[in-house]
Length: 311
View 1 (cartoon, rainbow, N blue to C red):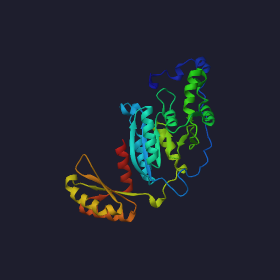
View 2: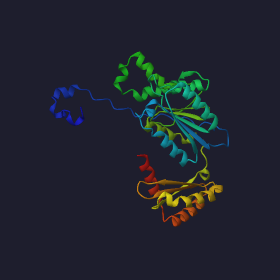
View 3: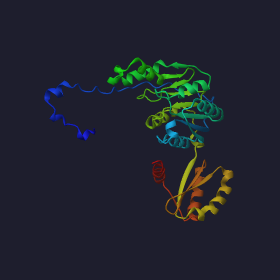
View 4: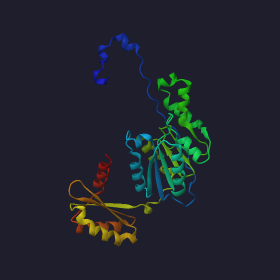
């Protein structure tokens, strides 16, 4: 029943209201973060390429909308990392083994999302341990943080031994993994394997917060190695702008500048110019604006457009 249909507190007898104990407040936790480890790629190296492995039957059968790959794509772009691959696979051990090994061998930074809960189909930790020849081991600090963050929940004390064991599965990690506590108000860590593969929960709010807080633990590219993106709106249809854009891309390809065209439902398109040389990209933006009767979008308009596409 919805709260709007519940009996108002004043309608309840005074003795009943007094007898009902108030819910204990959620504890305010402030866990210490992990120390920043040495560069896992080696001194002087930084992440250039990335891949995402989204794990879950619920994604493939349409029960859950995957928001994490899009958020990761934005994270990579904003931090100068070239995201080269996104895969969605089932909760299947053999698929996790094959994909994780292949991605760690090929890319500098790999993330997995999903499959780390307490139920039978949450097999990501166990599968990744097997993938890299490790045993599983309970992580005592994670268990302690889990208990501290949940001590206000009355249902915890009512769980059976089997239920408590299932809950502890969320702290059963590959034994050689780096356990990185990156957010002081969350007990869930990011577990990193082989210095490259980071294991994330599938819940979008948790995924996003942990990913954002992981930045100090990653050897990210320097500011001058991060691409600049400029967006130009043109009212012309794609068929009319195609010859110009084809010639432009051929001309600027040696400069490592990429040109993309994204049509709108109504007449027109957004043209994206991406490159490391900010001034050169701006110069080309003016050319596109002139040739295609367009208008360069402001940073605010670009951000609003990207947000709209995610909805």
